[in-house]
Every structure is written in C-alpha cells, then in structure tokens.
Picture 1 (cartoon, helix red, strand yellow):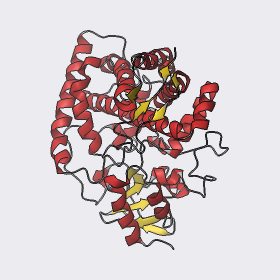
Picture 2 (cartoon, rainbow, N blue to C red):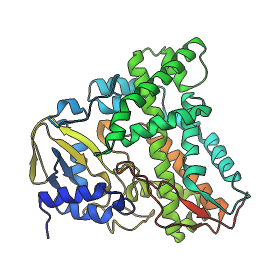
Picture 3 (cartoon, one colour):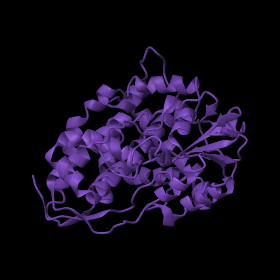
Length: 401
C-alpha cells in the first residue's frame, strides 16, 4: 500500500531513532513508495534514485540554508565552508582548493597508506581480537589527512572532540547539548587552524596547509577566513566519513565470507568492493538541500523555500535503478551510486576515500586469518546522517605478514 505524506513523516522520525541505526533499509524501502513527501519540519523527503539525481543537478536547488524559509539552528561563527555554498562562490573556492588537492597528489599517498594500514595491523599481531573502529578504521584516515594537510598527529585528541560535535550537528535532531556546543567547537577549532596557518607562513613545509596558506597560485588566493573554514572542512570531512566506509566494509565482508575470500585471492576486486559498499552501505545516508523555486518532481511540487532531504541511502537501493538492490554484489553490472553525492557538490575527497578504503579492505582480507564478528549487529554511533558502527569487535586466528 502506498504511503501517505504523514506516513513518510512518521517513517523519517523512526529512522532517526537509535534503534533503527543497525538496519534502516526497510524504512527506506517504505519511504520509496512515496518518492517525494513532506516531513514535519518544513523539509520534503526524496527517496528514489532518478528524483534524487535530478535534484543533485538542478540549478533551482541550493546548499545554502540562508536562502530557505526553513527555520534553522543559530549560525556558527565565521565564514561558511564552500561545501555549503552555491555557485559562483562555491566554484571559485573549490577551484582554488582543487588546484592543490589534486588526484595526482592523492595517488602519491598510495605507498604511505599501504604502510600505515600494515603498521596498524602489525600492532595487533600478538592479540586474537581488536576493535576495527578504535584500532584501525579511525586512526588510518586521521593520520592520512593530518599528514596530507600538515596537522600534527599528536594533536588528534584536541580536534577529535571538536570534530565530533560538528559531525553530530549534521543530524536533523542533534540535541540541545550538541547545538549549544557547536559555536564553541567551531571557534576553538578555527583558532587552532588559524595558529597553524600563521606557523606555516612563518616556516612553510611540504604539505597542503602550507601551499594554501602561502597562496602563490596565479588563479588567486583564499582569504584567511575562507582558508581557515576550508581547512576545518577538509580536516573533519577527511576522516569522519572514511571511518564509516572502512568499518562498514569490514562488517559487510565478514557477513559475506564468499566475497571476503574473493578479495583475499584477487586484490584487483577492491575497486569493485568499495564502489559496491558506497552503494550498499553509504557512509553518508542523506543530505540537505533547499528549493530556490517551486520544483515539480516525482509527481509532487516542492514549494520555493522548502528544505529537501535527499535520502541517498534509499536511492542507492532503489529497485528501479538496481537489480536485487538489497544484495551485496561487487560484481554487479549496474554502475553508479550516490555515495559521494553528485553535481557541483560531488565529494572533493572521493579519490582519497577510495584509496584508503581499497587498501584497508585488501590488507584486512589478505592478512587476517579466520576473522569473525564478535558482536552482530555491533553498537552504532548515534549519528543518523554519518551512519556507522561505534565499535566493531573482530576476532581472528592470526595476522600473517
């Protein structure tokens, strides 16, 4: 039976409940029965692949909440990161960043990522179990993004708390404690990054932070407020989502031992495994947009000024776009997913996330002998948008060289 708008609103509320975190996909399936439906907070949910894709590329859809009539939380101090801006300012700032954060630069990290992955696994050789999140999936991307940017790895304990608060603020209902802590976290993290910028200008090193801070690019230079906002964005986005990608990947492979064995025997499958994971268990479950004009989509009209929740995880499992969508199949013929969004806001860090995911899962498959889940389902983080296990205890017989 087709869901009404009120039904979809109730389903979305249920989706936000912590009890839904381990398996939200039945709720997404029911939401897809009404592809476009109003929610209770001035937003509309869009749950099918074709409609989500159209809106990701629609010029009448904005990333800027200030251009919407939807009531929002108090704005955090400082400039808005380019991720949350529209063209042309988004495009200008993104171009300046991408002239330094290039695919070639990411590819040059491959040897280092392999070394970091194996060092983390080596550290577990005298144990018979480990927590994939704390001991592997978190320290890997944090170390990579710190080295790439030039942020001291030993400062992780400082910025982890700030990053956690800002990540929780992405949720539709982050809680009053998170909301009240966002401004302080933003200010403290911005101050920390500002100090690093000043240090690099006085003594530049071979890192992305120095190159952006010195700013000798003939195309222009990021003003200091935009530079700090951009570096904060890269630091947080550069590890939060990748932790989920790797953890969800290990969990999914252990639930599908045939695919784990195939990856063990053929490392070349890692590319397809990661792409299928981005469809099957995306680290980012849904994303917010705002209607700049009335939008006719999926048989409904989203009014100008309304908020839009693009249910990316629902679209990834849309049976109109994917055959047998609830089956994990890295060999499937249908390409494409919404794991990195789309349009002008396509994920800046996609190449780096892919590299880290491919290397991490390849080495886990190769080196862990007889791995097994010690808790299934594992405990999940409370965040509904950035969905992933909070801990993932895994046992094993040994770790080979």
